Structures are given as structure tokens and as C-alpha cells.
Image (cartoon, rainbow, N blue to C red; front, side, top):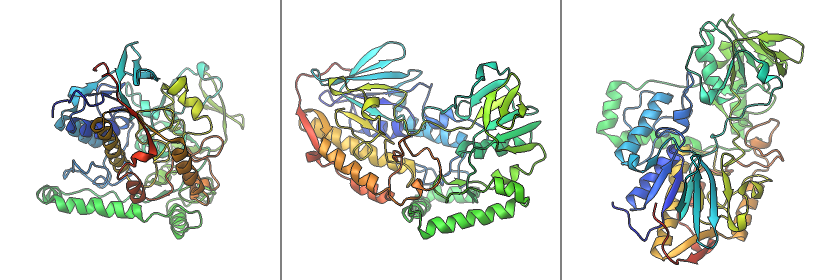
Length: 492
């Protein structure tokens, strides 16, 4: 469909799954838009995270767009190259490369109260004008790298897991891995056997449960291709499993999964001392639930050490821990996750009257339906505050992009200039969301990336994916301030 001149122009920031989903709907609706990404192509986090063993922890058929089913998934939980290939293929099939502005990082967004548009500044210094901005940078965008004293003294190499250094292998090296989160659970077993020695520095032990990762046969794949409704059944079954989730700390599910994980640990680790070090003191779900049959057995390898003494500093040759021991290594890998609670921390965003979004969110990010923020008209956040944890993020993104598209259609159909959520609606919604956090496993006895430093849960949605879909099924225009249109804006 050709762009329609009277529709609002749209800047989409990020070419990952959210940017793709938004782009598909914008192109279908005849909108004029651009998708900015700092990388050279589509994929987002699946383009960035190329570490050994990278894979998804959501079943493949559910980690797919409903409008682009893939009968050819190779196994239950797809690996990074396969997921990236899928996302690139979807973008290509929907002609999104014509809208991509690659190798371009957006550094700031500034709303004009007078002109009713957003100025979008890139790292090259170029500034474009758009009626609407959709942030699709998500929450796993900015690596979290701890500030360890003496880092400048270290003579080896360091890198974050999401920026894996492929210039040379870790095989035959002495390697330090800091952190025990979702990425480390995958890359540590993948590299362990080939290293000369691997030391995993653990601050907090994690629970894992078995990973039922079965390959699909060629016959199954061809069957799914001939009968897409059968692949849909797999997707629906996975969705229903998520819909049954109960996030209460005292829920039967929480107790059952914790006990299942505890028994799994007992089966895999015989040494009582090592097992004690690997046993968390919080229930499953307080930190991100992880799937792996290889994580715990890795610590029984003769060339792998679990270190629980805190790191105090870098040295010229490695890392020193609080017990005074220097751990000499060639490479240090930060498996320390992302600044997930610091939404849009890679951007400077200024709304009405030059209000800074980072200041607006100083007590923790929040948005109405995880999507819109008062004081920031025509700004939409995909995978925004309190949208995580309850279903496939692909499903969440489809729900949000359909909602945004409906709001954009309303702007266009009614000849409006801007849409901005009312403060009372926003406040009431977020008060409800935070009240629902009480008693959840996310507030149990652990540190997690779900929380702002003040303790507020800013990432999780406290209900099911089905409830989220119901909330965003149809926009209530009386939840918004609607501004009438004036003169047309400068085209892209």
C-alpha cells in the first residue's frame, strides 16, 4: 500500500522484533515511516547476542509472529542463528528493508509544543521531524557492566556477553565469567570444555529446571507446512501453559517448581559442598526462571571453578577476590545482563515544556498499558514498563503494535494532531499494577533486574498475557487528550 499524505509520519527506533511488528502494521496501513537501528540489519537482540549457545527459552512456535508462522523450526527452543534468520526473512517478506535506516543510532527525541512534532536526532548530528515516535528498543538494550576498580590495569581482554568478541576463541584460554544470569547459563556450558580453565564468579545462585529441547523431524516440519493448523496447536498449547502461570510467592506453582528444581540439582550435583554453593535461598521465579540441563553439571568438570568470594578489583593479570586470592585469566566475560529497569536509558527524551523523561521516571519507569506516558504526546513504548514476564514477548509486541496502530488510525481518521494519555488515567492504572505486585514471587528474597533501586517493580506485568490482550484490545479514546490538527508536517 502506498503512503497516504494525511497520515502521521512515524519514526520507529529499533529493528528487532518490536520494530518489525510495528513496521508490518505501518506498511499495511499506508503510513510513511522509518525504522532506525544502530546495527546494519534487522534482528535487534538476536543480532547483538551472538555468544556461543545463545538460544530462546520460549518454545519456537510461540516465539513467532502470528502473521508469520514458521513450520521449519528445527527444535523446541531455537538457537540464535535460526531466530535471526527468521526475523530477517519476515522483514524481507514484508518489504521493510525499504524503510530501514541502518547503522544509525538515535540519541535524542525532543517534542515541539508549538509544532506538535518530534525532532529525532541521530549520532551523525542529523535531525528529522516526525509526528510520532515508537520506541522499539525494548529493555534488553544497554549492557550492565559493573564498575570494578582497576579495570584499566588488566592486560587481557574484556567484553560483555551481548558484544561477544569473535576475533579469537576462548579455547585454550584461562577465562573468567562474571554473573550467573540467562546468558551465562547458555554460554558457560558452551565454552567450558574447550577452555584451559574457566572460573565462574557467582554473586547469587540461580534455580534452573530441565530444558525439554527436542528436534523436529523433517516429516514433522513438512506436516506443519502442509497443515499450518497443526503448528498453530503447538503455539496455542505453549500459550496456554503461560496463561496458567501463578506468580504468587505462596502459590502451589511456586512451591512445586522450587521443589522440582531442588530435586534436579540433587540429581545433577553429588558433592554436598558444591551443591550448597549452587542452592538459592529464594523461590523459583524471584529471578528470571531458566532452563538448562547443562548448567549445573558444568561445575563438575575438572577445569571449571565456582567462585563465590566477591570480586574486589582487577589486577594486571586478572581478578582479585575478597579472600585476597588473585585469579589469573586471559579473558573476562561480563555475563551481567542489562540495565533492564532503566528504560530508554540510551536516549535523551524531552516532552512537553522540555520535561526530561529520565527525570519523569526518576522513581521508576511507568507507562499506561506499558505504552504511553503523560507529558510525552505521540510517543509509544513497545516492551515498555510492566510488560514483561507473563508470556512470549512476541505476543506482547503484537498486542502493543495493534494498539498503537489503532491509535494512529484514530489520529488520521479524525484529523487529529496528537494523542496523550491523561495523567489521572495513567496514575490509576499504575497504582493498580503496583498494588497487584504485593505477594508476588518477584518481591521475594532476591535481587533481580525487575526492580528499580527503590524496590518498585518496573518490568513485570502482574497478570496473564490474556489480561494484557484484553486491556489493549481497543483503545478508549476518552483515556487520552486529543489535539486537533493544524498544518501538515515536513515529510520524512
